[in-house]
Amino acid sequence: MSEDEAAIRRLIAAWSQALEAKDLDGLVADYADDAVLFDAIPPYKTVGKDAIRQVWANCLPYFPDQFKSEHRDIVIHVEGDTAFMYGLHHFIPTPADDPVGQNWLRITVGYRRINGQWKSVHDHISTPFNPMNSQAWMIRDRHTLEMPDYSAANGGN
Image 1: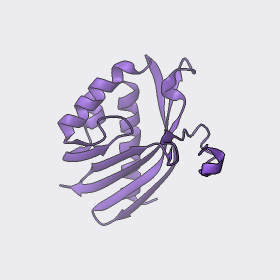
Image 2: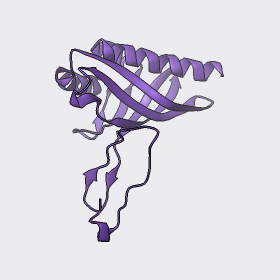
Image 3: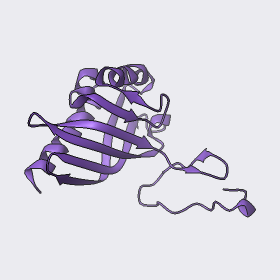
């Protein structure tokens, strides 16, 4: 593993720790000032580190008191001063049946090295959907990423 990849993995771990602690400053510590967030929930586009902090301030009160942040299947590509990662993210709530923990999210993060430090410049969080009925396709098991039947004959289910 390269030093750049290791540095980005440390950023991911620090972000997860900040999320679990509901630490707003820690959540946005590694964002560029002009970062863009495409989230899975409204607002779907947020521009700027301060605005992203506010999104989390609005969201965290709905989280359970205790939860863990889990990243899986992370792949990181680095070329010069640009990098991106993609993978899956999951919340592990207490109690386990809390709605926040019932789905895996797809994540992609773009990084740029700014003044010698890796900064997140773009986060994209998504849940796939069925184009026949516009319903979200929840990823319940990260090992089972089968293709749903989109056919109209099957009602798009």
